[in-house]
Length: 347
Image 1 (cartoon, rainbow, N blue to C red):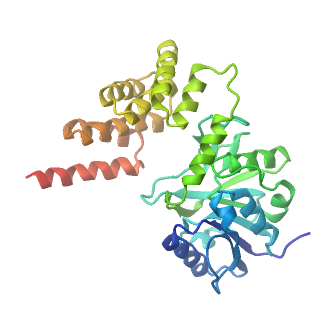
Image 2: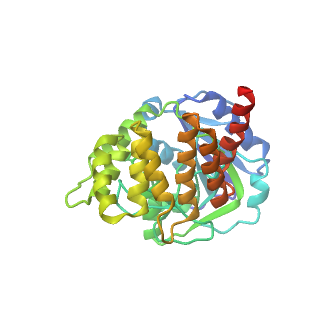
């Protein structure tokens, strides 16, 4: 059954971020979309600007797929946009989208509050809950591409053919599974980077989601897994000491970037800063075709460690190296600017 032209903004909320929820609603209203509705499911309240469906138990249990399907089922319009409650549209989002009429499933540019790109279009191995995602360039195509669940735009017919898997809760590859099944069914994924949203990445209310993530990872069958795969599992479960032992073995054997960088990160999280600095330095100089953004990440983390330890000259060198490799690394730019404030305060 086809829907009339227009947008059904489908928002899920646990009610923990009221200021951001209000900002999201205002950002939708102010764009002046000719035909639209705002469908809200979860734990919120009635509001004349929205069509609210209370489902507090689903929200409390992080049942994001049930809430998304509930909203999409009652959508009136042909375009469905799935949204978290800590997203905000840029004022010109609708204006930019006028050039993009043809799509099955799509995303737009996602930015964090500092203006840095935030996991909007990436790839991950199919059926592997311990795999780490990798950002894709906006013009890049990949069979394992997916759009993050905080903003997913699709034709209603695509949702109706695929639907979210309601056995999955938040952080259980719910968005990845949907996109992979959609492409397997013959639908295409696009990304429109000229239109943008801010994802505020607010952690409030995610306790149940973190539990769901841990359960999902722990349930994965690791029979025959490599030390790298096992280490990644423990890293995601925040069992850093177990991860370190496994990454050390793999890094010693292969000397590759992923294992060395992951080892550095786990050392950092475990408080072993000297070991972390050694491994970040090694990761940043590993030869081969390693993306500049990954080398930049190693320098950024090293800079942050030096900064926290009061070694400002060393921090400056690493932060400048990060920006040299990735000029749009806004966190590195902000941290570098912060060094000037620290020096000024010390005078």
